[in-house]
Image (cartoon, rainbow, N blue to C red; front, side):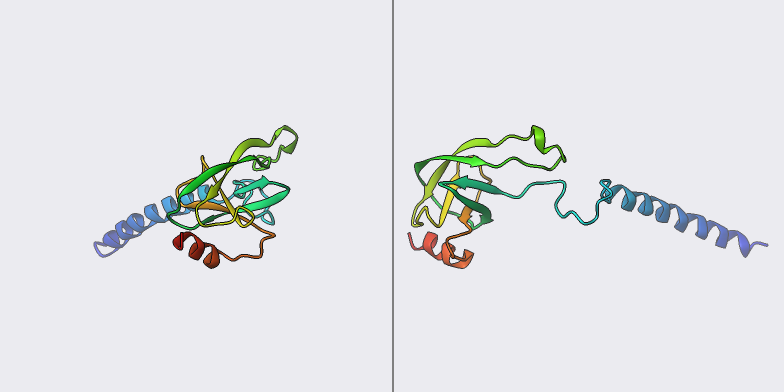
Length: 134
């Protein structure tokens, strides 16, 4: 009978972490129930400037230049209530060494993030070279 007691304790010791791990995994899954929607809990980093859409991209260090003018952060539908979402006005800034038709910066953006004009045809490595070349 003494050989069964250590096995019972071992099973109990391993069962508790397994139960805790399972509970944590369930807590981390999406509660929206809509598995086909990607990124439903956050919005893409977009800005609209001069009738073009610019997408946020990390490039590292760069210098912000002069203010270019009014820009808009489009409404975000991360809560599913687009009727109450409104665009947010902001200001676009030049990036030293980069044509504003290619990329702009925003004062409130995270460090190292620029907004690339999706219609410019420029890829991120090209933009990084422009920044380094300034």
